[in-house]
Image 1 (cartoon, rainbow, N blue to C red):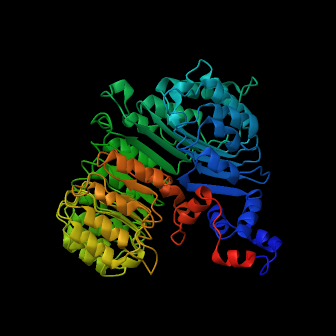
Image 2 (tube, helix red, strand yellow; image 1 turned 90 degrees about the vertical axis):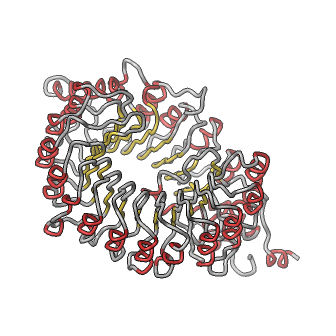
Image 3 (cartoon, rainbow, N blue to C red; image 1 turned 180 degrees about the horizontal axis):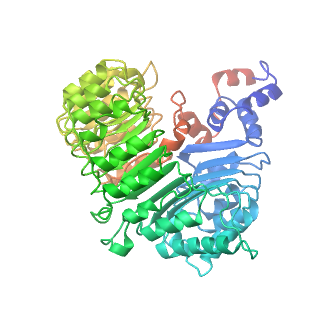
Length: 622
């Protein structure tokens, strides 16, 4: 390398690369490795979410670096001994996923060290049994990070229960514009909102603490969404532009602990809301907002005409009249999501062509009265980019035919619909540039749907495909998929009784554009596939599936062989208990994961085996 290019020039070039590219360069030869090690000490951003490293592997990648501003990591293999490595005084943005094995000490350390932190996002902090996350940790974070603009703590706030919980937020950054909380008990939330309202009322004549003067976005999960809660939020936070509330009742709400038409009237008193989401989950109890009807939605739509995004889940008594009021009142609406709309029918979109709407994202999950006629009307909206029709069981082939010509449609979910192979023929011959297609539970589909789907331009664009719970799909169908050489990144086939070892062998032997075996797949879900035997595990050893990062398989298949596979591929995330694979951040940060031309085996080799040396490097040394 030195004979071809001076080391200083190489170091300058490498310093301009992102982490992934830098690590790939380091795997090329000793000279590049030395230059890459120097460059790591000057990187402004370090993003590595594809793999979860141990502290021993992470430490050399994160040397002292006064210029580091952004750090994004998967912390699934990190514990408290890595806290000092994560809390850097120079940081402006910190995003950490899967912090289950890290205690609340991280919050305390961040407050004491990261004084200039602007954005903080933590997921699953301290969820492992025995780890402590307490009120003092939160207090130190809020006191120390006085420049915070966005705070996302996806954890249970009941661990912060303290008499001073409401008042400690007075010390939070005045710049805080976005606050997202995993779950907060209603008593603690109302205590906080009461403190905020009291501070507003006495500011004119007494010097009072200032709460959330800049807050515009609030996302919460609570026990119950109630009229009192809506009124308190509206009174306490007049600058809100984004309100996202979700509840998951474990008992049926009473009249005083539920949302009614009166509560909806209290939304958006200052006319600033752009995004509203009110969702009632049925995770623990089959229930809904039974005390809200069309009148409440009409009153809300009248006061929220500037909305750009609306998400409504569990409004079982709202009919087409209410949903149409939103569509016709909100002329700037781009995103519409309705789930469990038991009274939503085709009439909602009857005259959508007469509106000025430019919908880009539409989700209509569990709207079982919606038929092909309604989707044909919806397809007049040519700007659709994402469409979720899962569990709309009355939809058939004609709906897909109408959608197949949408010029911007990239993500389509048809789980549980009544489509047949003919629908896949329409998609294959259509013009929509699909990158993600979900067909889970479409029981009429057969092996014939696969060549029909990949007969046209979809083969060039499709990256994510879900063929789970389709009983008629067999190994023959997956062999047809492998022969098509479609460069899929994610393939899900869980709970298919006729998928077996032959499918794994076909995918392992698949080559895309002359690449290595199984070269494109990063995620493969084979959980509870009836024909998979212990012999299939040998196809997951190198050199097969070199880019695979997520693998779903039945853990009881052969525990010894599964454990041996996990040891041989430490960067492969294996799910053996039926959990869904992937990451919840793809919708927001998908560009971090879409590096189709990179081969992460080089990264693994550099981290685990020492420095690889190329043939040219060896010749030069001789």
